[in-house]
Image (cartoon, rainbow, N blue to C red; front, side, top):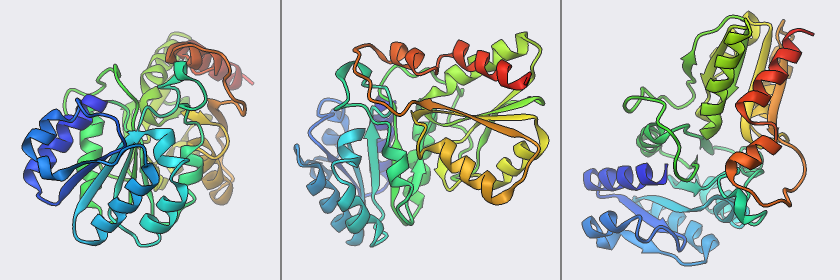
Length: 307
């Protein structure tokens, strides 16, 4: 994802002289091409992420289109006040990019785990939250974000995410993508956990359960029309995310369903339990421990479906 981001932001800057890239002391080699093309539009703000957000807000309010980039936990938790008051309060058109969200940096421990970012940020008025699922969607999300005249949080994985599209998909903020049709259960996925969700749907199909998969690349605003369809037309709806079970995508869907229901469908949520991860391990290991492997998703869906 980060390579796709670097390439796409360079192309967008080539086409739009307002685009400025601010880095929080990472990605220096990653952005070599950007710096070669636009040396006066790349700023390494150092290990001063809160200041980076403030600088970005000032640029956005001065007619530029700043994009900030650093590790997710450092650009969200560390900068919450600046995101709230400098960016969102003023409706500044800043794209706040967090790389390595969720369990992407699982092996580096809790300092680099980002399970709470969606929960905290979706409470901020006017902030759009985008969680692309593959490198192609990163490109599409960047393009769409630049067309908005307001703040955006772009939540990325890190590297090695498989492409799920053959090219840049049709991408509309607030409109989910149907990745697989199904009639029995609806699996609603957000972010780069989508490959596991698609694999789980295959396992369910082999077990005689028709599972549709929808890609909610936009967590805020939610695709309410699509939610109305799946809650009204299936037996079971599941949300799957690489985020805490508290306050994330699944919580947003549950809140919507509580306000709009009752519905015939039941809701089951998959996410990271409410505890820190003290063990060392890579992303695949951490996902398995959190019940986010394809096998674990499929088994729990089967149990719920046959209740």
